[in-house]
Each structure stands twice: as C-alpha cells, then as structure tokens.
Amino acid sequence: MGLLTGALPDFPWDSLAPVTQLARTHPGGVIDLSVGTPVDPTPEVVREALVAAANAPGYPTTHGTVALRESVAAWFARRRGVPDLDPDAVLPTLGSKELVAFLPSLLGLGAGDVVLHPAIAYPTYDVGARLAGATPLPADDPAELLAQRDDVRLVWLNSPGNPDGSVLGVEQLRDVVRAARAAATRTGRPVVVASDECYAELAWDEPWVSGGVPSVLDPRVTEGDRTGLLAVYSLSKQSNLAGYRAAFVAGDRDLVLGLLETRKHAGMIVPAPVQAAMTVALGDDAHVAEQRRRYRRRRVALRGGLEAAGYVVDRSHAGLYLWARPDGPPQDAWTTLQDLAGLGLLVAPGSFYGAAAAAHVRVALTATDEHVAEAVARLSGA
Image (cartoon, rainbow, N blue to C red; front, side, top):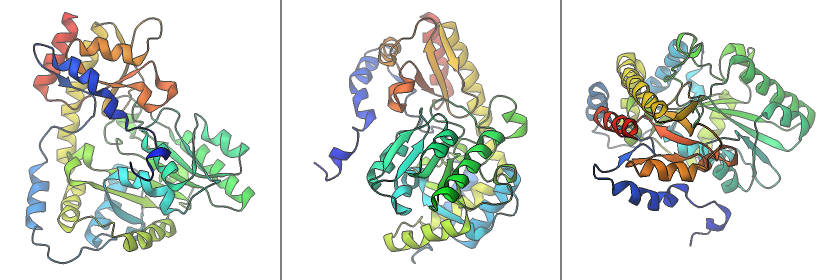
C-alpha cells in the first residue's frame, strides 16, 4: 500500500471492470466510449518533426526551447485572442494531468489552504489538492465563495468542461478573476486562478464556434493584468498527441518562472524530440481543422443515436464528450451503464465527476468511424 493511498480516493476507472465484462459479452464485442483516448493517427507533419529531432543526446531545457515558447505565444495570439504573450511566461509540461495534479504542491499549498474546483469535474483537481495536504472544495459559483472565505489559495476553472462540455463566457471568467483579486487584497495572500482549457479548439455550438472559446488570458478577462492567472493546455486532443505527453502552462510570468525553478530541481522536463514536435504542431492549423471535422461527424452520429434511443444530451457545447441521461425521471448512472453495456457500449458514469453528476453518463467521441456507426446501429436497434 502506498504511503498516500489512504489520503486519496480509489482510482475510479478500476470500478468499471464488471460493467466492462458485461459489455464484452455482446456478440459484436465491446465499443469503448468511456475513456476518451484519441484513436486517429498522429499527424504526419508532427511525426516527421519528432523523427528529425530524434538524435537528442543532451539534456533538454526545462523551460522549453525558444522556438517552442514562441510558437505557443503565436498560437495564443492566432487561435485564442491573447496577444503579446511573453514567451518567458510559457512552460512545457509532461501532459496536462501532471500539472493539474501537482500545481497545488508546486505553489506551496498545504494544510489550511482551500482549492476550489467545479462541482462537476475531472477528479484530478480534487486529487491534486489532497496530494498537497490542502482541502478540495467543489464550487458551482467560485466568485461567491471567494467573497465568503479567506482560505482559498487556488481556483481551478475548466472550460470547455470535462465531462459536461460547458463553456464559461468572458463575463463569467472575469467575475472569478475579479473575485480572486479582491480576496487576495482582503487577506494579503495570493489567490491563483488556473484555467484548464484543453478542449478549446473543439467547439460545437454558437457562440463558441464563430466567436471562439475565451481563455482566462483573454484581455477582456484580465483587464490588462495577467497577475495570478494561468492557462493550461494540452495537444492530446487537438493533435492526437496523448502518447507524446505534450502540454504547457502559460500566463503570469512570475508564477511561471517560479514553477520553472521548482521543476528544474525535480527534473520535470519534456523530452527534446517532443518539444520539437509540439513546435510544429502548434504552427499547423490544418491538421487541427481536419480532426475537428472528424469529431463533429462522430458527434452528430452519436448524438442522433442516443436521442433516437430515448436519451437526452445536456450541455455538451464543446469538447470530446456527450453528457447524456435517459429521458424521464432521474436514473442512477450505474443503471444507465448497465443498460448500455447490454448493447456492448461502455461509457463513463457521471458519479466519477462528483455527486452533482450522478444521473448522467459521459459518452466519448473518441472511436473510429466504423465503431461509431456500429454504436449508432445498436442504439437504433434498442
């Protein structure tokens, strides 16, 4: 038993084993729509960049190459409406999950400190707070809690949200930033607002398709001041780079440089070939557009199949998932899991993402076109 095991919740995916076994008994086999791991090829232009940088005998820089950090800044300006980002305020990370899990520790949080996170949320926000010895607290309205409490040191935002695909607008983001700054002034202690924005390139509904998903670093949100703000981003989804562990954090220059110093000591360094691949991936919008078209096609098909089978899809304005529930009275997610497993379809229960999500299931778009078509056929038959 690990030293920290007692302080952490059980790893949720382990509990899916019995339902997975039921889904596997379907004559056509299981179609896994639970985890959300990319299945499409890594773009050739990115693979070529990785191979070209494969001769890497020396240690890479923890801060990332200048070329990589400049490509991140250019991407923010071009795709996220964030101009003039200082490349020094960019730091590559080993995927985004490790940054989410360790940010409270890297910030020096501990006993007596509170970490706010969405009430329906990716469980690693909770885990990261616990690893640091801090207290995780679900919050539907973080601005309200910031006005009431003096112990909040970190606020996690997630837009587009995993699992429910909700999107925070400029005003909502700005309200949280203002509340965090007011709390910092009142208490004399810094409050960091970190926004996990990994699905920002996958918007499906208006106004987010034409207007873009706003970043916490958007000037309309920051009001000209990035102090205390961090944006976290991953290339796993938009570029099929989950296997590369390619991500970054950017924002407040002093915060980023502080994280850099700690990560130097810990040896948390993105490999040089991956840095080269990230640089190319961030400069190529064509493969992202192609992947977006794939997911849009699968989303339309799966949503139609679910709705035809009597399910309601809520929110799901952006991201890689459909947030679904049976039409009618609320039904526990595990019952819905059993129903779908009987069709050989494996999905994730909403209860993995908080008590407020217990009546929904998360259906991933990350299956091949053939598997999506088969899933739709089974739903139609049901």
